[in-house]
Image 1 (spheres, one colour):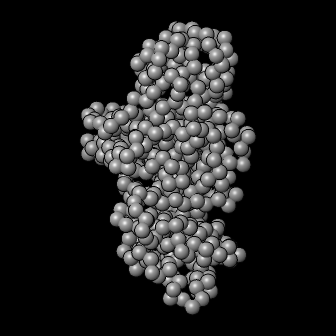
Image 2 (cartoon, helix red, strand yellow):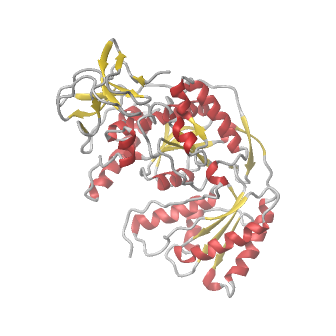
Image 3 (cartoon, rainbow, N blue to C red):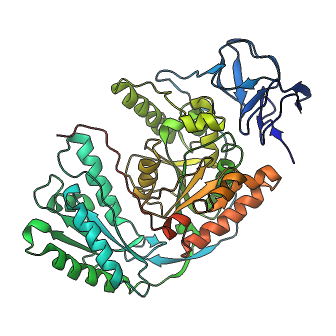
Length: 493
């Protein structure tokens, strides 16, 4: 078994796949160095002398600059490396890459909706228009679960603190987000629960929802009901009966939209879990399916890789705006664009935002970019899409669902129990985490360290995702976890 890896032949560092004791010889690219101190798993060791100001190269790209002279064999991390990121940049389009060749079709057992969309769950969703009715929504969730049966799998209330006392773009985000959630095909029936005096009240929200099936979506204004609990239960019973008419049936994999996100990353995330998800993405796209990559701040430093894989110059321009608009958002609030990685990332071996971003973008595989989406904008084009959303786990995973993802793949080196509005598959970067937090982790990509080929793990992950799409519950669903977080950017009155 390997104890270290040089990811790219041009790298001047290696990554420890397991702890490297002090005094251990490390050989790569024709060079042999001796570890000057213990190198923790996921962390970097210098393959040669690196002068102060010289680039640190990993994945074949710079991840920062040496703060000081770094002798060969030294531990390379935050104590001797600084970021190279800064202000808004200008970019040029240098197209490269191609989409994966078509592969044999695959099917899963899904729920076909009347509007042509496909769900992988048949749930009843309760969507409050405003935080004031959250408690009612939660009480209804508990009561209505006693009524489910047949093909109806769960009743879920997606509570949130918004819908009133918001202004401008912030209020628009909430309305667009709630409307997207109401339209999501994983819900066989939706109760929209309003208060009556809120800014984003039901009449206003209907303008954002657009055309809807009155059998699938029902509304209740609590201030207009003498007994809102009883009236809401009658509507929920009608929704449950309607949702029971949907049954699982074979659906082509081309109907799948899979979101991709990472969080609590470590030094192995960009070597195991993220590349496996990238290979999965290419495999699904080869079958006509769609994937969405988000968390724009974690593209900073690796954005040109994605820009040059845009299918045309218009998409390139949209990707430039995606990156620069997010940098402008940071600067508008007097924040630096490189205030990342997190303490957990650093402990796991990630040194700079460039280091994190180059690992993060491994999830995109090798396919061309065919869509660039604004927050809450639904997918229009099959293939790889980029979505504007922050790095925050709950906000970004929710954003993927709002753009149509029926499932989210979430890679992690540290572990997290959170969920999102859709099944959220936790993929560990290392086997220790998979064993220790087996109640959180669904899939172990850490097997790559033990020489399981990436292609084999990608096929295994594809089979697992198809099982989830066909009804297999992930660990967070088994625990009853369903989270939702809206991207808040503006003023609260």
